[in-house]
Length: 178
Image 1 (cartoon, rainbow, N blue to C red):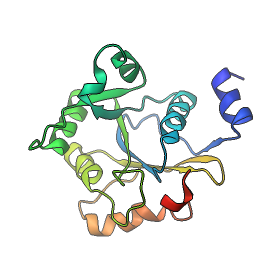
Image 2 (image 1 turned 135 degrees about the horizontal axis):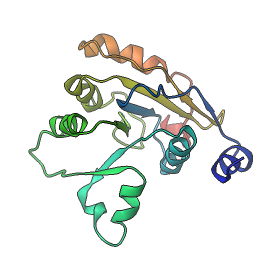
Image 3 (image 1 turned 45 degrees about the vertical axis):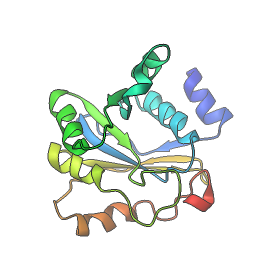
Image 4 (image 1 turned 120 degrees about the horizontal axis):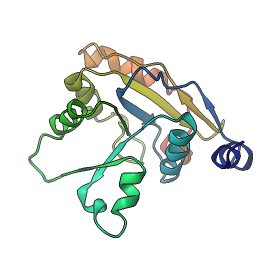
């Protein structure tokens, strides 16, 4: 047993249920619920244990010396968040330029409880013509649950309830934000 697996499974008590289809080289991965900074290292464990390249976006200021190397090493891609830019199109362009790119993000857009998800993840998937993969971080069951790819139809009103239903009953680190 490798060190990462030992720490994740034996010391922390977590399991991964499901898997990423290795043939799906590009996808938007939505991780729900996002209630704590602890989600970041769980994501890194998941990336390492599944042996799948998973990326995330972060503000470009984080990619400077002395810590920029760390964010690149962990799959970070810098994004210019200057107001007035079309961020969905900028991210869709990243997908077009890369042979393999799986972007993990939180559709909630915050670590607080929200009734309505941000929609950028959906429009990124549509613009790049790629699937959405749902990943749940269930702290109550200590499980990372990976769903099959979901191919958006272009009808967000019909697709959103289907996407959200996967996460019903999932409890985040901070239960009151789940």
